Image 1 (tube, rainbow, N blue to C red):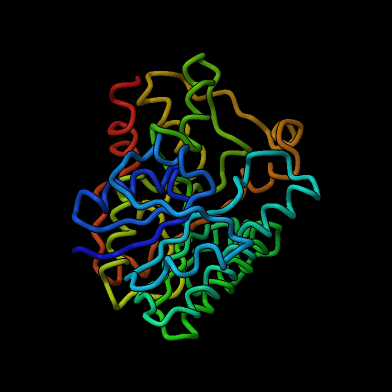
Image 2: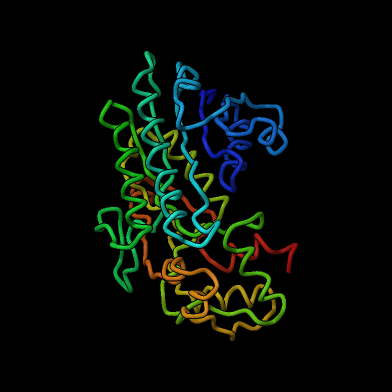
Length: 308
């Protein structure tokens, strides 16, 4: 495709795989990063690197000239620390201010990008029990919903200057290289695994391979814009997820972790961890995206076949 693409957050779980996939298909990738040497150790020498402090756009804005796309993944780790008032401020600002400054810098370019893709999360919807959630569903009311709302509104400002803009409301990413799945594995391997919360909540998941393909699909498909639900087309409840994971690992799934215990461990974030979101990837389905991993058991077997 030979697109010239800028990526922020390139050294994270999504970014590392996405960068390598883009390079392998022939795109030119510029990595905006806080630490160039560290990023090079993770990603290698096939990329262009630009020192990026989102608070100082004058230092990097000119690097956006003559690019075709920006994929914006950067933001403080949601579950990196307990949600103190101070860390919640970091979570919000790292998404609001960096997106605002990035879009503002794009606005200042003479030859603007064609597409701006920003990550978001299904946390936009809050906890909704059994309600079916499409891209048209209303905003939730908790802290993470507030963060996603602010995040997406800043990204939408790119659309206001004529740039196709998509916000990817990602579900829980299943990958053997990090994220939620690796945290589930330890208790299961010690025969004390089981569902979180009451187990009845919906668990919106996506295999990392499908997630990367969705980024490419949206990058290349000019008909897709706005919010996009990025989850598997198969909806499962937490009980089913835990049971299936236990089956793949040949371990029992009987030790529930109640919300109050999670709250002791992680604080306010516990309510987000056990939230229920029955999310449907309506826009992707309507535009003909084909999932490789629609079935949870197939997805887990693919990820864990060398780990079980």
